[in-house]
Amino acid sequence: MTHAHDRALPRAVRQAMPMARDVLEEVAKLHGVCIRPIPLKRLDTVTGKSEIIDVPCGATLDSKCPPCARRNKQLRKAQCREGWHLDEEPAITPDEPNEEQRWLVEFRADYQAQREAAEKAGDDTTDLDAIITGLDEEINAAGMRGSVLGRATAKRSRSTRRRQDAPDLPKRKMTNTTLGRTFHGPDGKVYRPSLFVTLTLPSYGKVRDGVPIDPDTYDYRRAARDALHFSKLVDRFVQNLRRVAGYDVQYFASVEPQKRLAPHLHMAIRGTLPRAEIKQIAAATYHQVWWPQADEVVFDGDHLPIWQDGIGYLDPATGEVLPAWDEALDALDEDAEPLHVIRFGEQVDVQGVLAGTPDADQCIRYLSKYLTKSIGDALNGGQAQQQHAARMLDALRYEPCSPTCPNWLRYGIQPKDAKPGMLPGRCRGKAHKPDHLGYAGRRILVSRKWSNKTLTEHKQDRRTWVLEALGQADDRTDPHRYIWRPVPAGDANVPPLAVRLLRSVHERQRWRAHLRELEARAAGQDLSATEEMGRAA
Ligand SMILES: [Zn+2]
Ligand SMILES: [Zn+2]
Image 1: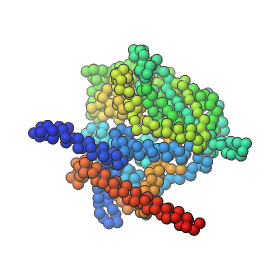
Image 2: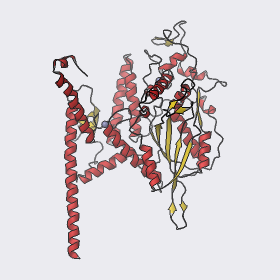
Image 3: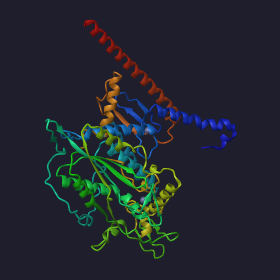
Image 4: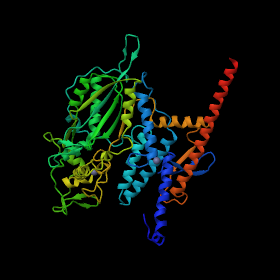
């Protein structure tokens, strides 16, 4: 950012200034310090003191904070390893909410209030909605189940349930276990086999090196819709898998980009099934999208629906009110076709893996390989692939990404929760962005009974380890001691980011030095113990 007054400075100075900032950021990264910390106000209810504390951004995939992304990757690997070959049922009891969960929910409450105020004032709530959606995801990621709003909004299921036909698959009697079978070797050794499965989407046209050979016949629309609804297909696969397996199958999966920019899935499955059955399940699994039609353009260019307060969107020519989302769904009758049907492609890879083998380690590395990259990062930078991505984005531009997508106006329907200012082709949903290319879902999918620990507990493990190494007890005596509050943007009490980064780097250095000292002391003790043993001998 160059401000007008900067131009008064000599060129060399001007050029040097952002450099220093870059260096600071690099140093912070080297020290594993979060480069996008979130300032939060922490009120200590015991001392009455309040302090501003930086918490790591935690790097959701949209954020570009390499240290947090790396940390997340390590945590995910630990989580994956923990559950894959579990030999005892995990004990799933809801934990006392911890500090992080508490402040997330409080945070969420504040934004809910802001959103309601904004809505009342007739302001645009798009940004607030995006924040709230992000927070809801964080709340789940922090190991809390469900939504803070509970199931207050009844799920519509009038016509959808009956229409999702059950695929033709064998069905075993359900047993109440999450563990797979074990096998005994001739030597009496117990083997605990599990599976590593890779599922891909179908072909949309021939590709070479990730680029369609004939872009004109490549089915971009289908590719776009498949990417948008991919997570639903994965859900169905898991449902079918459990029915066939006859036990409560647990999995740790990652959604990754292929070179052709389609999402695909790697899944570590606890327990084992015959390879042929996995292939049969993948082939039989499909998901139907029961949305109104989005193929015939009704409004376009200057001919767009008009908003009227208290009524909604009107046809610009006739003044007729457009069908609302629920009405449009109700209008789908018996003869209606689904907007889209998604299935997996023929390429299904199934690999058997034994607990504790190098194969297992290799798979775990594979599962977390792309975690620091977005779907769009699969681009190799070549011009042909850039053009391929651009065409994919074009196809996504007018594709409705969700019931609330403004693109519904293009097809003559009022989006769910319609509000003024909606424009088709201008949806701000993640799915339409170059980083996501249609897939806006979670990149890591972990079933609830995968391991005994949530990601937050894995974090807690690391924290406890460090505190023990530092000789400090982990102070978890009173979870109610602190109250966390978001700090409004531009709060004068928050020092500039550069200052905060410098402090964190300093803190980290001090901490490292201390750990090294402890290590050295421990090594010294070992040495004297050896000497003693030598003397005794
Ligand atoms: Zn961060
Ligand atoms: Zn959208």
